[in-house]
Length: 144
Image 1: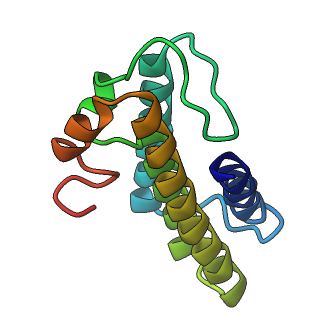
Image 2: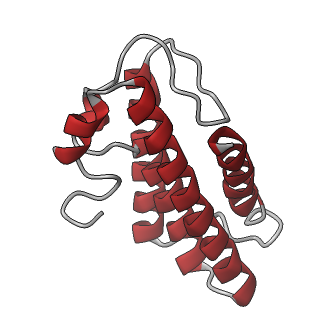
Image 3: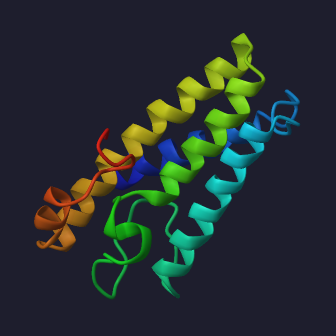
């Protein structure tokens, strides 16, 4: 059940970002926005390379090979979702309309659903996750 919920949440997260393209809310000339977008892509790439050759499951299915606790995972448990939120937030805030705000609300709410499903599934697969979770932040150090 959690895998199916996480799958729907993931699809909605991706769609909430994709809808920004036809709204012309992706690109900006503002240096702060560009900086946030570059940082988001860098965090995404660093996270993915740290994750290694493991497959990325669209449904929140824990991968084989142990818990990843290095790279950005040393500080935050969900750096890929953090990068999606940072990218989306930069786009949305620089092109704020009712529709981009709705997109942002969908991105954040479905991201939270995905995170909580994934954490429960990973904790079931890897008992050491509980200790790891006590020493790391979900997405933003000192905040969440």
